[in-house]
Image 1 (tube, one colour):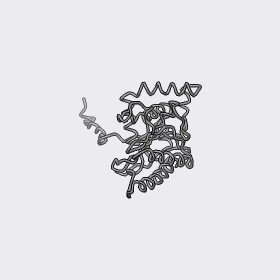
Image 2: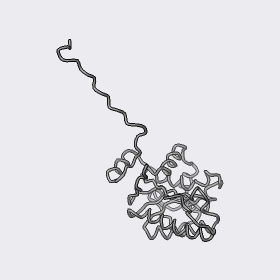
Image 3: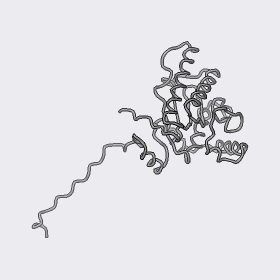
Image 4: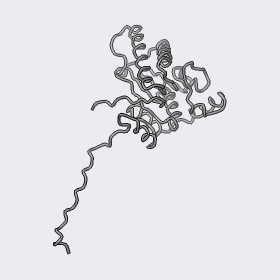
Length: 241
């Protein structure tokens, strides 16, 4: 089946996933992580992409970001991917493809899903068992949102600003949300959409997307369509009692 065109309308956030080819490691140490973040900072500024959250894992990356132009997300990811691949191949003395095809992205309703998406991304290392708590993960934006250290290029979404009237209040409430964690159902939903790329939101949100989209925003029902029932044959009028 042919892949659907990427759906990345300006002004709506997306949950982004990109893996190493064959799930191979794309980061080997601190210098690699720092180079990727520097590449992301420059590309996001050049192509007008607001990065709200990120997590760099040994063999993949996650982002939550809002494109300000129709091509902002694609141009940013292409620029970062090319620049980082050239760097990595040079320092690792290798050739060939670094990334697993094109990145995946799923548009979502920020009203309902922005904070869960951020918590999902920034909790990646904890769920994998690589760190005991998110504040120990140097390569995610959690430390920025929790007030441990500021990131120069993270753009705080209005959903984060709504957590409080002061930086301290927002950071404190965000730490509380992180400690509460996400339900199993929420994690499964976010994971499914991150991998499938289907937009995430309620029926009203999806209906609004469909009015402006040039492709489907929901998967087709599974299985063959049901055949319409054939009308029963009627007896001739002169045979009815």
